[in-house]
Image (cartoon, rainbow, N blue to C red; front, side, top):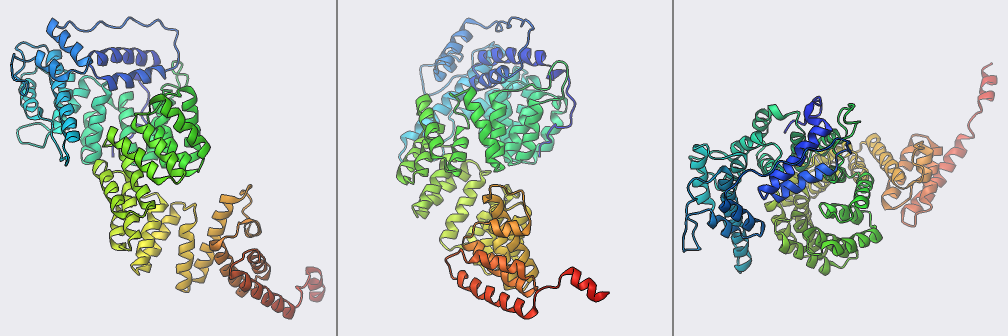
Length: 598
């Protein structure tokens, strides 16, 4: 994986005034090049910097551009992409084709025309997808022409950093063909020339995520940028997408709290982006309380923010906090009800209310706004599972993994659907996919253990449940299953240990003061449900056979509170324990024993 630059010393790039000056210039330059997302991202990091008393230098004026390039730029800003590209091309009466570029265009003009053509092709591709009744995978109609033109411009040395970025973007979107450079090579060259283009970093990150073999190549190529904050942001993004959330948090913490100097005072990038990505990382680590605190703090400072707020709605859904989820849904609808994130949040609200049809309707609305929105596909699959519509659920999950093969929730959902249909071998395949993405998540290993049990492979099931226990199965599912399997195999000691561990986990989850983990406190304090009754019954027999009658009696007395059949068995065991204790007589006091020895 991309090496996280955690141990690297802070150099001049991290000085607040230097960073502020660079980001201010970047916002101006990126806006001039119509890279709205990158400009917005840079300005977001800018407002997160500590305040400074230094007087800022005036922003540099845009480079000198020709009148026709200025006209094309104004068309780009209005969204007239094909018109902007045509202005910078040779005259042509046929609007269905694009003529070659005007002679003697500046590097900015070459970039602007190529970017306008690319966006015009993407827009047309989306329109064709919507218009076709049976939409197939479409391709940008200008890709081939752009690939050829930019290749010759690259060979001629006519591309600046932004022209290189568009060339890399075109190569990334094109099928691999001989005679052209790999997309990552061109994107790396662009970023080495201008490291503050966040859009280029994102495109390079998507290539690295899809092909891990690129990681050492990228790391070596950016050796000169290892201490640059942009490389840290890039690493954190790749680590998050690669499900390496603990490492991502370390890198994000470095950005927030670099090595303290007189200039930084211990903090640097306090932007909403850093806070939001940290919250997302904690969410994926299932540390919901920490993540929720970060999201709440973020919304207090920026209530209009919608990016990643669907993740916050997932936390509220898991915690079944319908009041907070309702408030969040009302807020995002007022901010912008036609954003995919807003539709997903409202869908989560209806899902929590068990209104499945309405939830699906809002997830579908989110997908109409962005058909590559993985979260909406996955959540819609969950709703179809609840409606027992296995075919629709599988289709939704497959769409999700097509868009993002790293989405473990979709792989896990496919496994659940096949398991629901009794097809354990198929389910196992998808659970393995999910476990390969989240090897530290005990739920994945518990799911695999259940499939192995369904296939009669108890030894493999035991190994899966043991793996789940090693990764802190706080819900106690693995410990309960392991105890039952050990009991069936006659491994009494291991079974007792697992049952005891299960009771301890349930006690920690429900007790108001779970710090007291003495055996008696756990047995007396745990809430007795079906699984706990099974554990108490086994432990009562185990301690009785070990002549630990006091502990066995506590287990039996707790069973008397449970209304199931275990209650009668507990009564019988308690009578047997009393009978055996009466036959053995009261235990000798230490004083009497010493007298007899004397």
